[in-house]
Image (cartoon, rainbow, N blue to C red; front, side, top):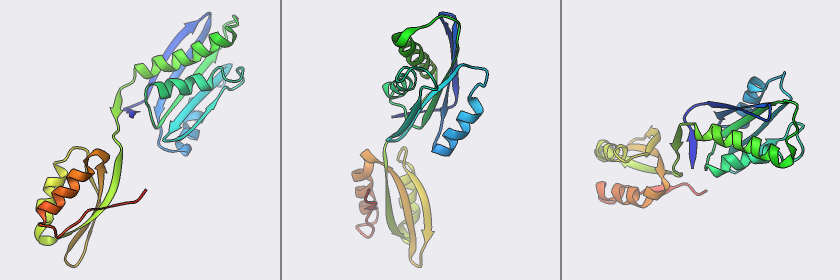
Length: 196
């Protein structure tokens, strides 16, 4: 999966109609609502949009014939394996009817061109785990863990004998991290993965 590094825009004219797209990174529905309010054009004929955050998605044809705008925009998002993204395609009518097929190509094509112009960041699936480390092992274990790409220590809580670390671990690295912790602590510490 990929996410947008930053917002990106794209504009084109198709048979006298102006299509302007903006793609924005979003992390929740409140951000989506705020972005839709901020980036819709009141002088435009249609502000069509689609967004995806994980398995949740929504789209709107905003007055265009059903299925000719929002779904093609969502298809452009999914076609590029994007997550946590909102794409708004605004149309100013130019006097020439495009027909259903023409609208699907115009909205989907404008969204896809906008997303192709974006800087993307690869997002690797992660899992969360907890491990209790004694003080004598803490510095060595933390140094080795932080050397693993994309691994993060989300939380560190000190206890009477050491610290409990909450880790965000790349899904593909869980076995390696578990073995590393066990080896570094001579079996005194064990990684416990959160159950999904």
